[in-house]
Amino acid sequence: MAVDPRFFPAGVPLTLGEAAALAGGTLQGGDAALRITGVGPLGEAGPSDISFLHNRKALPLLAETRAAAVVLPPELLPRLPEGRVAIVTKDAYLGFGRIARALYPVPPVRPGVHATAHVDPAASLGAGVEVGPFAVIESGAEVGAGCIIGPHAVIGAGVVLGEGCRIGAHASISHCIAGRGVVLHPGARVGQEGFGFAVTPEGRFETMPQLGRVLLEDAVEIGANACVDRGSQSDTVLGAGTRLDNLVQIGHNVRTGKACVLVAHVGIAGSTRLGNGVQMGGQSGVAGHVEIGDRVQVAAQSGILSDVAAGEVVGGSPAWPMRETLRAFAALRRLAKPAAKPG
Image (cartoon, rainbow, N blue to C red; front, top):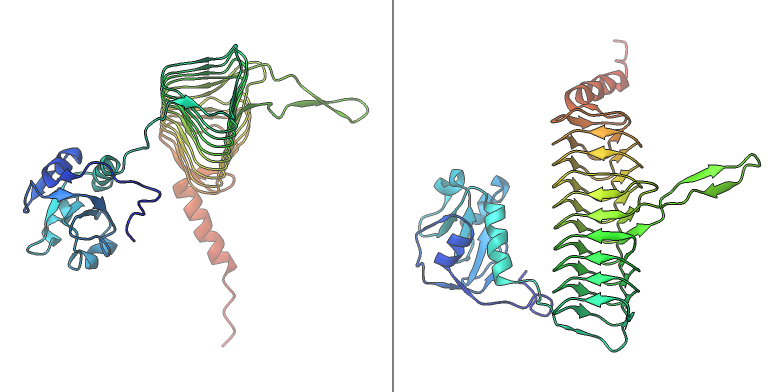
């Protein structure tokens, strides 16, 4: 399906030569001066579109595509039919993404404060900030230059946003210091009270004061309806470049390293520590006060109850090293097989 210009207005066209340079690749065949105006999947791209191929399952479509050029890795170049044009690059998916971003750039900031927005007189806005309809920026907040505050978003008292942050519609952020280029997608919640309480002798719950902050380092991105609780005594910290998918829950005092990726429905209980580059599959979870080392990979729906050493790949609930988990599953399936009927 073609890109719908109502939602994704095209930017300036690219030549094939420019597209190849953006992808960090080389042009094989074709006219480097040919102008490209859009992108599309192999089976639907037109003669002015770029497409890509990084999965062998899509090879049959390569012979049928009408795309002006196909971004693909070197190992698939021999499969390119005669007469077709390719941009050859080591990471076809990344290369294609850079071309697509150039053709369909992020909408620019439209500086100004909407008439229905409320900006407290004691808040400060940097140059070129956009504040959408019914947004609220409370006392003492500092919004860096070039930020976008979406409709109905709330920036709490004292919050600091670095330059170029984008806060989506209906998102809220409080008790937080954020770096540059931080993104909150619609409905994200940052800085709310953590889940901490004491039980009285009578069996009632008394909320423990949550007196920490949330620190979001540069280029952190938080998905729609994800929640990041503020710390109780210390801070909750998301390291630079970390990305949370939609509906992720980060408990109080959690700290992640740089460039962690947490897929939808991941839950991290309080005071857990993640190293750099940790990847967690959807619906996986971590108990509180656990240490997870650098570059750990966690399979979807896994449950981590104890520390995990750097570089491990784990799965299952409770999570074990993946090889052990797969052997256990295989043994369980053998046990579950119905007994052979007597001759």
